[in-house]
Image (cartoon, rainbow, N blue to C red; front, side, top):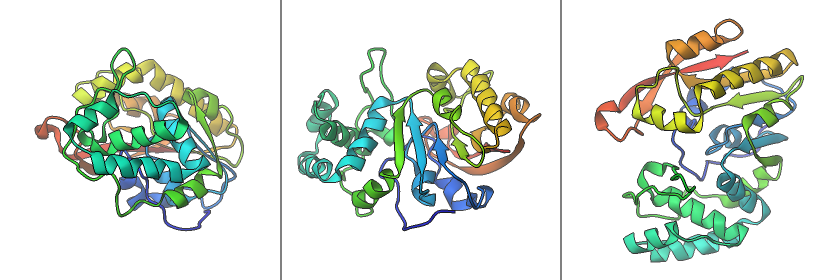
Length: 269
């Protein structure tokens, strides 16, 4: 597996995969050609395994623009974040939330600032596509663990694409590794977070993803995926993939009664 140096994700993301990185890296093949991740989010696995060649994609164009800005030149982004750090307050948060920076690096700084200071790092937009998450309790905009320089070096190894998962999964061939971590929905969503995701990623999309991953497997790609641990997801994958449950901590639910231990499926070829 390609290695260079440690680099932590600089974004917090609902459903992030730091738990997977800490416990399940041995499920990945030791050698592969390209690393392909169609639902990038915080990129926890990408930054952990540091592949020499990657295709990183997400339907969230602002997210991909943020990674593109860090890859191109991280220093202007950090200069703006330093200003945001000094100015951070409730009024300032909502002024930045309503702003629309014109430059790539300005957009990236806004995205990172909101990600770090909004409620629980949640990314959510209204029907007009406007970010509408309220301010959270975090005060720090710049963190001691930040290493944007190293992140930039690693991102220079990757193609960054703002697209639906289908485009990039279809590019996978023999010897490639796909890691797929879609928004979690089930055939009958009962959890509020799952219901929110269902507006973004429908059950039809879940079926389409399964079919795309099966096609990539048949072309010789290695597949590792995560998903909700429910009967409907199990039924979707059990005929053509290996599946097992992994238990982890959950803190994302708005209702504290829904927090605690949760089970997710790990799906592999």
